[in-house]
Image 1 (cartoon, rainbow, N blue to C red):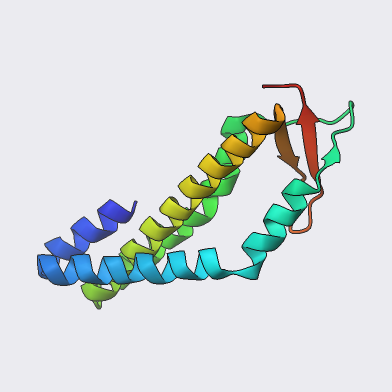
Image 2: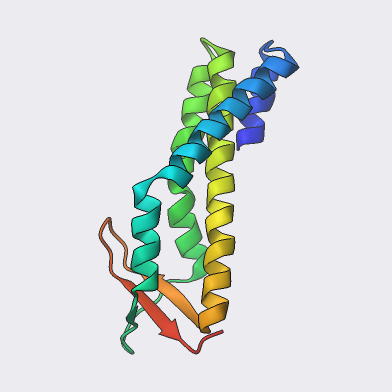
Length: 140
């Protein structure tokens, strides 16, 4: 999605170096904000302190969970496309922010996967802002 926003900014006349610079700035600012945030540390604290999963727990498929998690990024794409009309440089910046979101999600997924493999379990999170975190053991 970020690549589409960047390509559209280029098509609207933003010079290549400027578009890449703005995208890099957007990605860099977002990644700094994500990795420096206290929320990230709180989330990891919840994961480390996860309760054992109840046996009657209903688990969504990974595909559905992924679809629900990626839905907000469609709002970001809409912002890129809306921003593209009056100022394509802003679209390049927003494309970088989307790219930063993707990188942050990938880093978290790799870290979580490694953590789960070490514990031979799977982290399950209730939906909602303050969902409880469970560790389903012996599933890997």
